[in-house]
Amino acid sequence: MTAPLNPAPAPARPVLRRSGTDRMAGGVCGGLAEYSGIDAVLWRVGFVCFAFVGGSAVLLYLLLWVLLPPAPSAADEPVSAAERLARRINGAVSGSRQRPAA
Image (cartoon, rainbow, N blue to C red):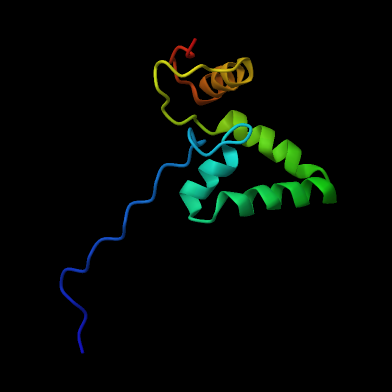
């Protein structure tokens, strides 16, 4: 039996970014869930477990909150002060010159 000549291409993976809809704090676990296909609840449980074990998960979550780009948001959606700060730092680190949402 031979392989088909034109195999179907692999489905495109979503971009790794913070979630705009599935968020408890910063949308990190929701974004990781969308990217990996693993439920966001499992990501959250993992972060909580590692936070109790050694505390490194808190630092990792904060780093991901700052380093992962945010999901596009609606123009009329309010943005918290912490989110504005995270977007400003992300823009400085990634070199983008986008204005932070007001």
